[in-house]
Length: 228
Figure 1 (cartoon, rainbow, N blue to C red):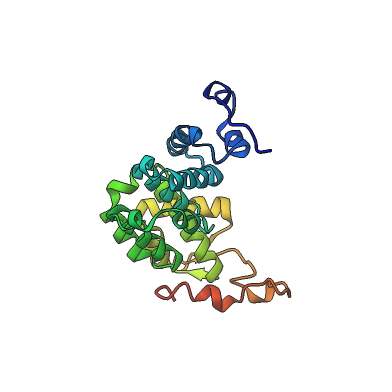
Figure 2 (cartoon, rainbow, N blue to C red; figure 1 turned 90 degrees about the horizontal axis):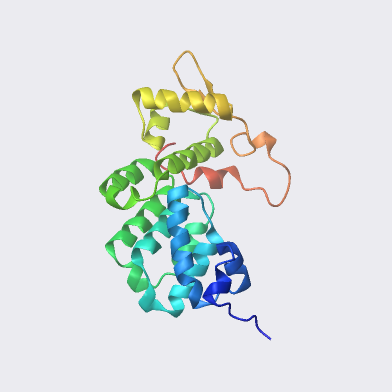
């Protein structure tokens, strides 16, 4: 037999994660899941499972879909890069909804990020600031992702390449680099200010483990067509 559907009174004693685990297809938990998205935004937390559950419920009850909530879910998924969360969420969103302007913009932004085209990304993000500003921490999350991709593909980057990738310059860039030096092992060369990135198996092929699961360096390099 299937699990019984809890009444609203019974549900109130559960956390959102427990509601999702107990009965993810119960439409009565939809308002709780929507409120939880708003909570993730304000508290700068993240739950992919809860958000996917909400998107699935919207599939069953499309008339209850809140596109503002859906946009927040997609923005939070972008912030989770390099995970595939954005694609997982997008798969559950009807094509007619994806054709709305705000979602078309988010799909374009996702494409720019996944292909390492950061200058185009930041230009497009500036045009859609009214959508993105609703989610605190977005810019910082993308800057962290950009730094991650740079570290996979380069042993050393110039200050100008870094500035383009993280959309910073001047004192703000200095502070960002200083933070990375302290926390991520970056080294700033005194001669020209270029940044030496920590060694890993992707930017130093000789460190790569000899396993079938290894990702060839050239695959990683392909995602940086404009920064090479």
